Image 1: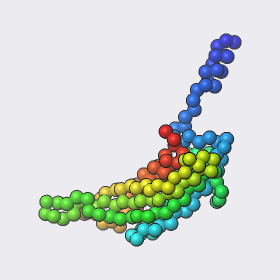
Image 2: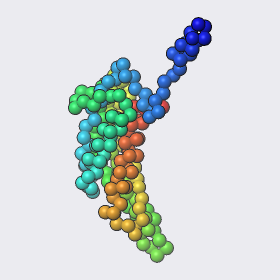
Image 3: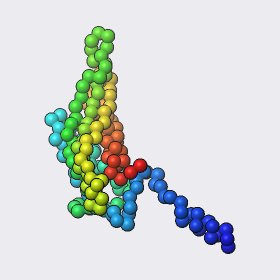
Image 4: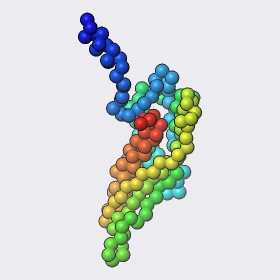
Length: 163
């Protein structure tokens, strides 16, 4: 009997952590609104917005118990893809480009209707490089997907993973 009571007390006092890092008080936060992020960049790759929007919504669907609603969620994430560009990263001894870096920046506005001190507007950036011997068309989908995964993780950590 004493052992059973001790075990009950010990398990009741154990802090609960989730493997995905989300620290959400589900008693007060039940819903999330994730707006579609339009592309506001001068350089554009068509599928980029849908890849980003789907991955962002999937991240919250798969790693939280928040119900996604069209408007008025307890948490609101909105913004736009503001930059998508490439630049030379490395040059050969002959003066030619050897590597090109692709970068993507997303502006995010986050609102927590229960804790407005957590609200923010911030930019998140990711980069990925490829050898200039490859064409951008041949590697673009993989590079964009990698950058989107990185940015979505950054957004998730900034909004619901309060480490």
